[in-house]
Image (tube, rainbow, N blue to C red):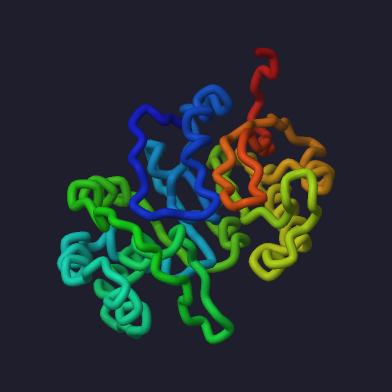
Length: 276
């Protein structure tokens, strides 16, 4: 696994792991893995920092996200052509947000546009499945053609899928490596389980993930798991795993926000020296 030539993702994504990329070479000293798997793809920050030598299987439960990546892989210039028609202002934002595109290039452009111009780049839908994040008043460059073309090259040996994270077991073989970054269902050490996140990734999903990790190990593959630093998470995943405590900067805002360093846990079956 190498992070010598990272590419920045083109999407803003809650819980993204850009901060982790600088740690990977020190934590994961393995350059001879075979295929790469990532079933919680999100903004693809970790994958875009790697140079997998074989096939990469990338998936996420968000089908619109995966369809967007597929469109970039197939023809980023068509996506850019559609993106160039969108204007970054409040009136246009709400008009574009409501349109139900069928054309894949238009759908991908809409997804990227809303991601870049919405409030905090959140992805949130209502009970009817309609995207409902408000306008973000963010003056920015919505896309970078050179970045899209570079990412298209990185996607050449990628197989995209949308669905539950257990899909990863369909393709894992001995000596493959799997990066797992599930949505966090706990507030770091303090407030217990987050109510609003239960539908996104429940405690029972964490136990299902533990079973998936057991299957990964049985076939002789490697895994790296990041998760919240909470005693329940530690109890679920620490057995038979190496673990590391990592710290990232808190990006939480608001009047009652706490800023500073936030601890996260990394679990892996890759042998490494725990000494400094």
